[in-house]
Image (cartoon, rainbow, N blue to C red; front, side, top):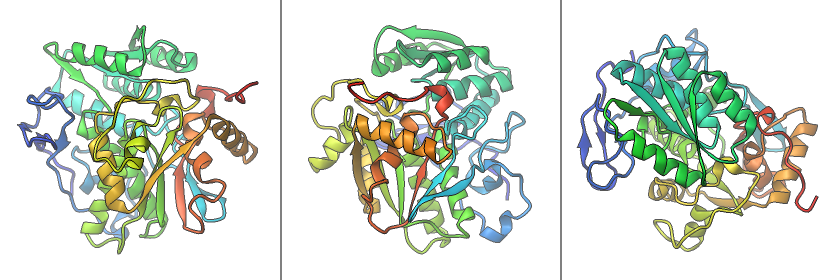
Length: 374
């Protein structure tokens, strides 16, 4: 069964406002919040996947776009044992060295289909790199907004793909606000990994791959780093699809990991709240990729974790340093944000439950984090 050829409508999960498929509208016209996709696919059974293309496009029934000519072979990353009941999925082995390729290829394919004058994105590095690469592949004009202080290696990679850089003298939230202002200009496609739901339908393939590699099952827990929550929400989508289709008997618990330095969702969780509570100041952290003080999909993230029976975990800077060094000693050189989940569970936080952690970005992007205090 091929992927959808008619673009499904989007809708606002807060107030139900609908946006026709094929529109350049990037947020709810009423509340300006992120949009979801009106798309409920049925995944193929395990035996039907044999012989298919060895990329995320093998899950065609679950994707809202047909396989594009701009694919770089993204997806199908290795699953390896780490220690005891915990395994790791090596999502840093992607064309642009991060898991963001899963969603970026969807955004670039959608933009190419819609034919805008320009594409813009905002990012702390990895999403911008991925969007820049796939826009280059698609022949699309691209500008990436990044906060001052973004890793020089990530800036170099974005520029190498031909995208223009707009460096904002402010934090990640200031950068997003600047990009959103530009996104309202006519003829602009906002390749937002936060607001555009097509990105989530790319990241969900992470779980479809796990399910296939584990022979049609999932582990007891899925541990996911959370800033804007795109991997976690994608995981929740995939789990729901597989469970609804009867392809898994039970849903795994979702555990969201945040840096203790910037943990607005963990604070809301501890307070028993359905949304963010108070203000979370920006603070320095080695996990820069998940340092998001006000994630726009906070309510959805909290609900997804709660519905799964999971929870939130936070990690200190020293734990991040130790986890990065530990992974390197095991042959895995991972960027400091990408080690957060291993930092959270390596000392047995989940007991004997089986779990998978994603290693989301390559260490070459940031280098080694240095121990706090020297």
